[in-house]
Length: 56
Image 1 (cartoon, rainbow, N blue to C red):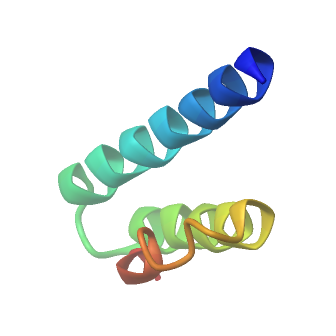
Image 2: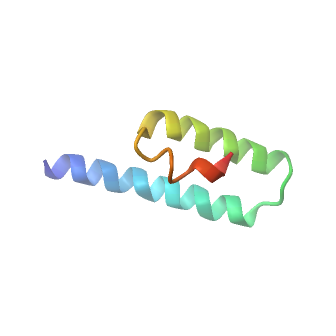
């Protein structure tokens, strides 16, 4: 049970870091690449889809 919590927490931190990156990059190819990573994370995380939905 504790292991699952740690894994979920680390994934949330990854999403948080990506959100920070998205805010800091200009809207160009870099932003698009970050968006693709967000979509991949969304597919992996499932329940976090809504949280990172604006990351496209």
